[in-house]
Image 1 (cartoon, rainbow, N blue to C red):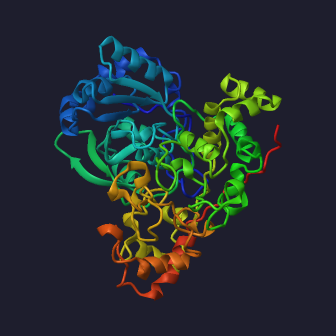
Image 2 (image 1 turned 90 degrees about the vertical axis):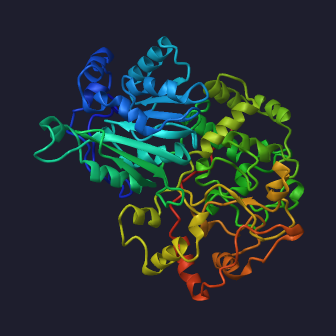
Length: 532
């Protein structure tokens, strides 16, 4: 059977965003910290248990298809992992996710022995499945959710990992007084109603419950709600080839503030991404190389690690790729990367740190990874809006609540501004201007002309001016543009991806702005480091 092997004791979190019921009795999960795998194989794969006895009906009900990527969350001994493997085929993949490294190694070994080449293992964290963004089609959680130490945070990371339209299948024990077994009543926290709410609150929609398969357990299917508004996770999942470590973050911070990363040694990343200005610079267009103004507005680095594409036109697919872009751009920092490697290799402090962190001399790969690791730590604390989503109904003023109502409803902002960043990460032609080719410069497609990525609304009140060209000075200006400023059409017969909200009153602008102000969370306090 499938179990999540967590932790010592489940505590009530002091942070209201993550406050939740105590999980299980203290100490009940100690055996999962360093499990006797053979004992668990015997216990969970040979005992007659509800999900085990009906495993083939469960597999059929899930509806796996060739090519799918499935995460078996809390894989335990890997029973379902091995059953999933042939059904998704060699074009698909099954990821055995567990907090116990012994279980992960066991699943990988047994899969290898069975010739299942599409199975990999991932050791997760108590509050994170540790999977890349938009990498899986389905998450399977069987007899495991009641072990989750941090259900909300864990489900948020699953939501991040799911592709658009991705699903979660939950199987767990009924917990009904006088009906469920004594062991379940003493061991399993909460029950179906609480678990379902925790999953829905993390940005999912319940779409199915099958009541004809299991007796002691329930089978519920959820879908990733594409337009859900959910709290901001407090940790960014790092890619496997660039795990976040304190030493790497410290090196990245030094590089971020070091003007020697520019060709003339005058401009650092922090020149345009100023900590005291919410990691923007408050300018419509920042000065670049030789003081010449750039063509696009500087976006904030806050919470940037949650994006899956980078820059206004989406030309970078990772933070590592993004990090080197401005450095080598002739109109921005104008630094040759080979010359930068040579320059840093002449600085003893950097030589030591690169060797300690990467085991190499300073090089562009390490520069990119260190800068990305630092930027992944720039996560804001919960905002008033996050506290509202967590159940604090007094966290928003009456006017902000009215703005939220418009945002979700008549104004339709939620269609593009959703998810933890309040951005769908897609590209749209709004008619702000028709000078910059936008996304089309990357794809070469006419239909992408003048399209730009939906910006995050996190800390939006602190990051003006707005739009890709910095043409809107204030939030009032932005909302007014959406209400009345969007043109009817674009050049060359190109239609726009939205239309002016002619039916919405100007009196609704103040509550909309008030809601947008509620999206600001406290940024991490960063002191410029002493450079080597």
